[in-house]
Length: 302
Ligand SMILES: *[C@@H]1O[C@H](CO)[C@@H](O)[C@H](O)[C@H]1NC(C)=O
Ligand SMILES: *[C@@H]1O[C@H](CO)[C@@H](O)[C@H](O)[C@H]1NC(C)=O
Ligand SMILES: *[C@@H]1O[C@H](CO)[C@@H](O)[C@H](O)[C@H]1NC(C)=O
Ligand SMILES: *[C@@H]1O[C@H](CO)[C@@H](O)[C@H](O)[C@H]1NC(C)=O
Ligand SMILES: *[C@@H]1O[C@H](CO)[C@@H](O)[C@H](O)[C@H]1NC(C)=O
Ligand SMILES: *[C@@H]1O[C@H](CO)[C@@H](O)[C@H](O)[C@H]1NC(C)=O
Image (tube, helix red, strand yellow):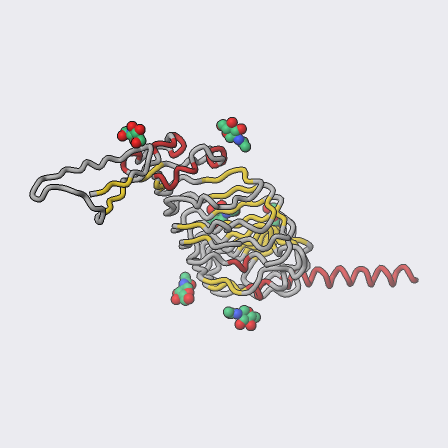
């Protein structure tokens, strides 16, 4: 009977599919087809396991944390980035380099959350966000690495659109942020975490995402001198309420909340001009008192 034949074909398709599911789970990982989690954490891996064709419609979490990975090669993810991967977690490895471009080849990024925290990166890996128009939420956690600088245009070109955006660079060695670090994409709702770095200031020309909601700035040695005075009364005060910055230097304001200072308290030490001429009788003593003036960056001559 015709219907019976159909039933047989249908049944064998199910069997084939189940075998695919079974074999698709890369050794030595475990795959949960209920939660769509591929768990490859704590396996002592020094390379990414081979992902064959995976019969999951969606991957919630690809967990590669707590391994011994040093290089992340986007080619190793080719077979899975076509799926909608919610989170790729490669935290707690020893990653020093990322090669290739992370993309599914279409307009969507291959993942929503990329967790690179607790690795050994010294440069921001711009190739984690493909340089073409993307639309979707983006969460990058690159906390606890060794970054010293945030370069220009970290998050792709002007065509990109991130409705939700979280970027944590907490616990690095940041000394500087390029004014155009966040320039390019349209970012509707942004949370930036700069905590626990070596930042003394932020460039006045820093282009913040349009929809910035929160900037965490605590745990940096902020230098609240005249060069940083512009920040007083700026919108940074509104953005940093959850994690307000504390001044480290100059000594006169050390330990004080940055936004507790009046504009005139952002003062610089006077400059000394060794070559300025002064008329004085030969042999006479001449005392010049040079005080810090909170209102002006005074230039002293001697
Ligand atoms: C998959 O995850 C669910 C929910 O956490 C759990 O109940 C189930 O036992 C897991 N299955 C396997 C095979 O681990
Ligand atoms: C991690 O990999 C390095 C080589 O890259 C090797 O020397 C070391 O023994 C590995 N550690 C573990 C825990 O597998
Ligand atoms: C990345 O992986 C591809 C494909 O396996 C390989 O051809 C390429 O050499 C790898 N790149 C690096 C820098 O390891
Ligand atoms: C990234 O991984 C670290 C360490 O495993 C974890 O503490 C942190 O919450 C993760 N970040 C995100 C955004 O999930
Ligand atoms: C910033 O905060 C001040 C006082 O806390 C408030 O008056 C002002 O409206 C806020 N500005 C924005 C854009 O939220
Ligand atoms: C700082 O300089 C201004 C202008 O010369 C002067 O009016 C003010 O009194 C000075 N303040 C102090 C504390 O010396």
